Image 1: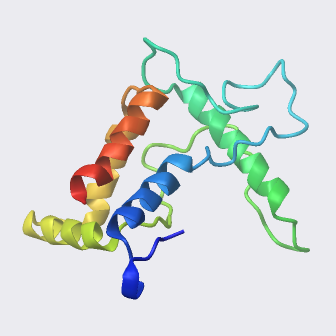
Image 2: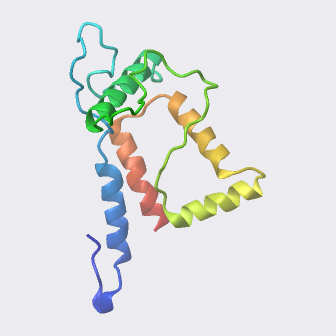
Image 3: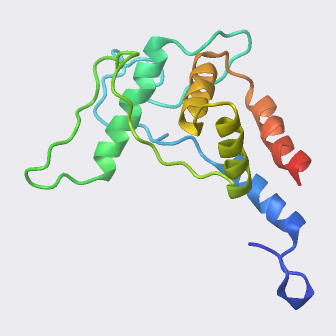
Length: 161
């Protein structure tokens, strides 16, 4: 909840604290354990979220497919099937690297979104290309510890306030 100062003016530090809490409190999406999966044949990440371990490398294709399958099963379980509606099934393989791109929706702070659009324009590109570049680097990189990520995310708003 945003704290207010006298005269109904929002407390900027309270707003920043609220942003940090929301960012850090986000649960792993679709973390529920799916039903009906044979444990002996499940891929890593297919039954429950992957856990970080020290000295590990980037996420493997088997782990990626396992998480993709768990997330899809949970999506299917949460959305009742409408009669006659076609729904994508649980994947048996990862999409090709050059598969058609899918639209996604994310929320970003409007100030930094505007600044990013301006920078991308100055660099002769668009924000979609920059976000894709960042996504590929993040997805193929080595995972950091949850503690490191927490510190990094907390610092994000500490230095921007």
